[in-house]
Length: 165
Image 1: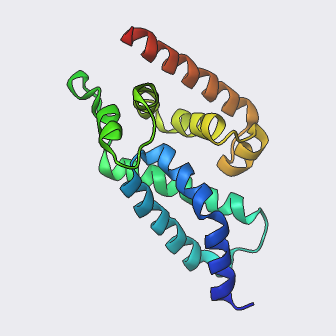
Image 2: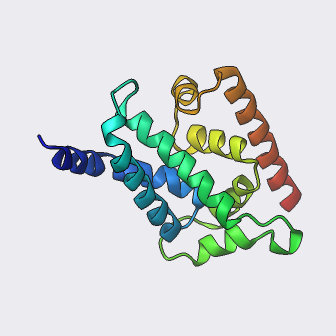
């Protein structure tokens, strides 16, 4: 199989999973599509350097997470002031591709306010149900540090919901 056909097969196999992984980080459909396109461009450009030291899915996930976090840093989508507190929730509820309810939108709002590492760990564990061992390989950090980040993230999200009652 030539490189192009092999890569097309990889794109077909991994697009949906990567889309949702990205979507949980950047939140909107259009942004997730843009980031996904960047992920596959980066993967295509680095495809010759991929030698199978890790699974292709791990390699693609690492690119997706890094691209998603870069996107957030460059676009400053997360509001930090109280007057903009509901911007993520409101934009999700207005998104034609969002199929959740108000509670789901508020969860995304709470998650969006977490620091990058906690947000990424929470999303991988909660939404993607990723094992800590797989996360450790993906994020190049210890399982203990990941468990601590997840615990802190859950505590902050719980506090967010309590403050809204």
